Structure formats: C-alpha cells, structure tokens
Image 1 (cartoon, rainbow, N blue to C red):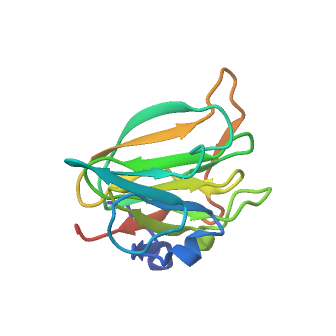
Image 2 (image 1 turned 60 degrees about the vertical axis):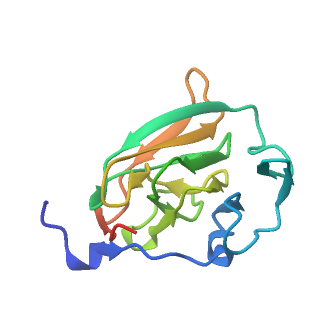
Length: 172
C-alpha cells in the first residue's frame, strides 16, 4: 500500500450512536443492542419484523447495489449530496465509510471519521455531509444504498484537503 503519513492513518472503531447524529440517522432493525427510537417491532405466528417509523429518505429514492473493496483501504475522495439524503445498508457483513461535517469546501483529512455499520442497521447520511464510498471490513462487501439519483445529478467527488486517509479495521 502506498506511503501515507502516519497522521493520515486511522483504525476504525465503533462510534456511539450519539456521535453519529451530527452526520445522519441510525436505524437499528437488528433487534439487538440499543433501540434508536425510530423503529417499530412486531411479531406473529412464526415471524418477527422491524420497520422504520416513516420514509427512509426525505425524497423519492433509487436503490443501488455496490461492491466495495475490503479494509484496509485508502480514502482518496469523498462526495456530498445537496439534493438528497443517502442511506447505507450493509447486507451480510459489516461495512465502513468515512464521514465529515457538511462544509462548502471538501473536508480536511483530519476531519474524516471512519465508522462501522453492521448488518441489521441502516445509516441515513444527512444532505451535504461529506462521505466516502463504503468498504467491507477485512474483505470486499456488497451493500445497498438509497438516494435520489437522476440524470445530471449534482454530486461532487473531491479529494480531502491534506491528502488521502488510510483506513484499517480488524474483521469483526
């Protein structure tokens, strides 16, 4: 892997849901862990279900399916959407991605915060929040995403100010 300054290398750790709130909305559909307060659970004869209390994103949405390489990875670019929220939905293994506050200019490398999202959870990224593509923990992973996608979508991909960030994580 390319030579990246040590100050531009981080290992991912689980962030408490309260810290994620500035970047988006966390939904816990897994039935495990802390209830995020925005889901409803039900059950019947031979089934259990959990659903969110309203629309997943605040616009019409397009559902996508992406394969991201595994960790470690180098975050060379981030994007933001001013016209839509974007949901990240891991399928069968944890995914990780970097987040940074909504700012007019691309974020500084040090502002990037890598987060883990486990199957059974959905994270909806606020409009304008900078984020990287998602990657599997330890191995490539497929994930769904939902956002309003249309022709000539005004999405900006840009390098973080200060250079790329190397992200590592142990398989969990």
